[in-house]
Length: 165
Image (cartoon, rainbow, N blue to C red; front, side, top):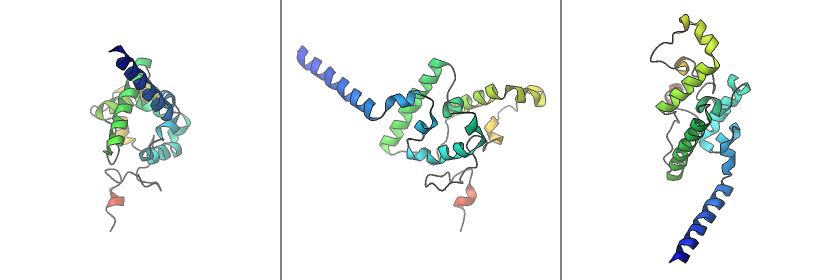
C-alpha cells in the first residue's frame, strides 16, 4: 500500500520539477521586464513601455505589484495562475486590461513615486474616484494602438483604428 503512494509522490515531484525547469520558473521571481514579455500577447505592452518615459526608471513590478515582500509574491503568484489559466484555455481578453485590485496597486505605486508632485497639486488632495492613469494613460506604456505588432490594443483607447473604413 505504501509503495504506490511513494511512487505517486515521486512521479508528482518529477513532473513538477521538469515543469518548473522547462518554464524557467525562477525568472518569474525576479524583476526583469523581458520575463513579462515571454507571452506574445504582451508584446505591444512591453514595446510601449520600452519606448515610453518610464522605461528609464521602472520595471513592470515597480508599478504592477506591491513593494512589501510577501504581498508582492502573493500578487505575482495570483496573477501568474490567472495568466496561465487564460493562456492554457485560450481565453485571452482583448484588449488586456488590469483588474480593479491591480488598478489600486498601480495607483498606490504612482502616489509612492510621485508623492512630492501630487502633494503640490491642489493642496495634495486627489480627485476622488479617479486614478492617475485616467489622465496619464500614455505615460507608462506609451500611446495605445501604435505598434506594428499583431496584438495591439484596438479597443477602447484607439477607436480610430477599428473604425477606419
